[in-house]
Image 1 (cartoon, rainbow, N blue to C red):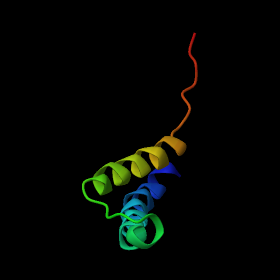
Image 2: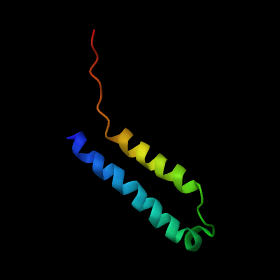
Image 3: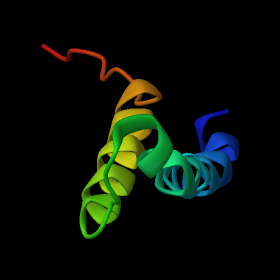
Length: 59
């Protein structure tokens, strides 16, 4: 189940970052530079973190 979502996690963050970059000047009044890399990485990390599997505790 989780493996099937990974391609979407790889595609969605650049699309979101591109949308923000395209509209950042109108919405926030500045242009994104290297912040796009950090934003893309943060969104990807957060999405992968949300879909992680919980490990079972072994005694």
